[in-house]
Length: 399
Image 1 (cartoon, rainbow, N blue to C red):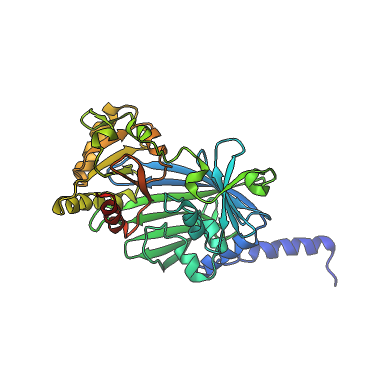
Image 2 (cartoon, rainbow, N blue to C red; image 1 turned 90 degrees about the vertical axis):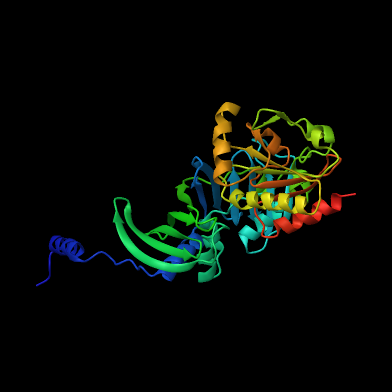
């Protein structure tokens, strides 16, 4: 006997209630592949990346980056108040984020490796991290998907445990990634495969407490800003190097370098003209900056090298971008950090970061100044060959 439409609907509803919900896979490689595929198949995305970094002995440091992609732009990245960039048609375009249409734009070829393309554009001067969703979207297999979480500081990552967790916001797949110097715990939305966020622990120094980072991603509605980088509709000056985006950085005249307006930890005025006649290295750093933990010991080693070889070299650590309200507030905190890390070099306080920004910004930043007061070289971020490079550059400045 045929069922009435009402009975059929009732039976279908009962069947749906009795049918178990689809199981979510908790295979690590499949989770990464599904996430990469989800971002590749998405037509457009505008999102915010929130970073909270905690370095032992320093206050938490928060950063926010806007990122996304659309039909024209393979990748879009904006650091509010600093830079805005896009990759489109195989080109990387970079300009200062000034709130107005920039007068100059850096343009260069961009390959498939997004992080390498941005590192090349910044020429080692503190290039930003590319948000992991963009790296997953551009990944070419499991290994690329795994290493997207390295944050430059972790060694090679391998797959760890995978587990499914039921949360009020829906099911989440939690995936552990392991490295010899730390680990990552990534959280993926089990229904959409999108990356919700991740926590990382990174051992910067053997035996020391790890640096921790909490990262979350917040998708938004709407389209990417239709700014100059989207179409380059009006004529602008094309430049080849980051320093050319702002003509007054880094400063060339000795007078601009000498007038730092800084004071040392003991309250004395700091001016480079008092150090004239000898090479000077300025090491800009902040307590919240994990790579600074790697460059600061290099400065101590370099000072020992100079003394051992009878080389007159001044090395000054410049604490900056910490948000201290006054020298009185900064002094005890910076002194405590220097004691804990066994650093004994002269230190100046750049409370508002204005002296740091004369050299283009980015942390850590190492600036080599000639005996005549001109900028001879700059190094951004940490490089395993930093000490070797600085020794060579200092020798070239000697009479």
